[in-house]
Amino acid sequence: MKIVDDSGKELPRDGKNIRPAQGARAFGCQGLLQEGSGVLDAEGYFDTGDVATLDTYGYMQITDRSKDVIKSGGEWISSIELENLAVGHPKVAEAAVIGVPHPKWDERPLLIVVLKPGQTVTKAELLSFSRRQSRQVVDAR
Picture 1 (cartoon, helix red, strand yellow):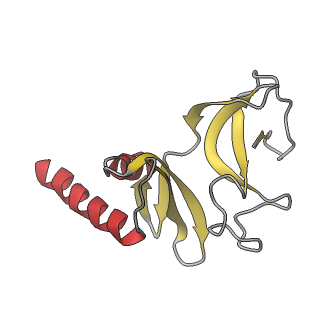
Picture 2 (cartoon, rainbow, N blue to C red):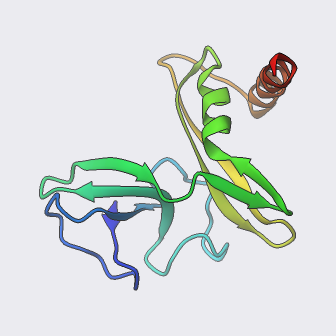
Picture 3 (cartoon, rainbow, N blue to C red):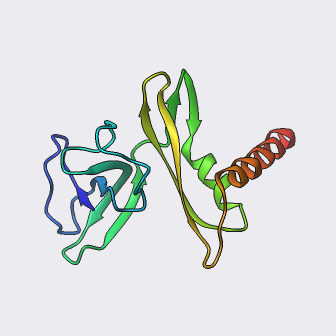
C-alpha cells in the first residue's frame, strides 16, 4: 500500500498525509487486475478510491472514499449501496466496490469481498442475493 500526491508521487509514511491510497496487485485482487488492463500503474498498483493515512509501521487508516459513485454508461451507481448489499450476505464479512475502466461503459463496478472464516460463495450466489435484496429495497420505498 502507498499514498500518493496529485502527481502520483509517493508520500512519506508519517500518519499525517491524508491522500488517495493505492494498493498493490497482490492486495486481494490477484487474477482480477491484470497487467496491461489500464487499471494498474507501472509499479503494479491500483487506485483503491480510498483517502487514507499511512504511518511508519505500515498501518493505514482509511478516512473517506474519494468517490462514492461509479459512472457506468451514463448511470450513476453507488459503491456504498453495492457494498451494503454484499455485506448483507450471510457468508460475507467485508466488501469494497471500486470503479474500474471499461471501454464501452467508461467504468464498471468491481466488488471485492472477504468471506467469513470457512465460507465459500460463488459469483452467481452473490449476484442472486444482491438482486433479491435490491428489489426488496426498491419495493420498500
